[in-house]
Image 1: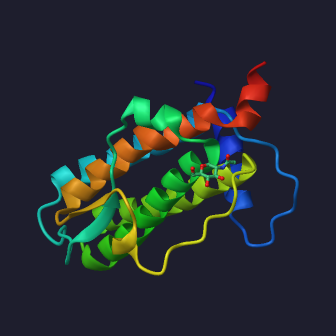
Image 2: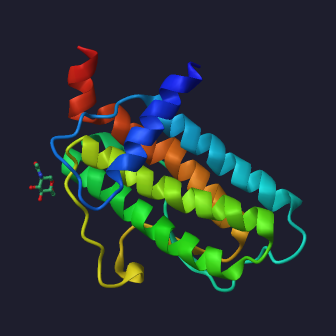
Length: 182
Ligand SMILES: *[C@@H]1O[C@H](CO)[C@@H](O)[C@H](O)[C@H]1NC(C)=O
């Protein structure tokens, strides 16, 4: 992997997470950016495995389904896919916000902060692909296709699986990237 190039891409992404975003954005279709976030999500799992105290989630949280049924997924149109991924990312942001306020272990805490930043960066990547801005629902439990987890480890596993599954598929599907390939 050419690391300097990856870092440049990440910096561009982070630049885009600032409120006043100049448009139009150049689409980010490079999956190495997502792979980097997946790797960091795994690092957070490792920090959790080493965590002995101050590592627990104070209450259960709503999370997205991570299992991908390809027949169902393929039948969805692009705005339905985008909605599903965006609502999942939104749920994970809420859940990680709660996790951040529950965890006192220093190492795990900084990993969680990093994960939250990465979730914001993924939203910026989606915006770069002209995916419509997501409006969060009034209440999380009302969302379809969700379940709850009550342990930190379960939440971190959902995080990794969601990035590796639906987020990845959405990026592979994105029309802006299809054009880039051809
Ligand atoms: C996608 O499917 C949904 C639900 O069937 C429909 O309401 C929506 O208009 C469709 N969007 C596009 C862009 O085809």
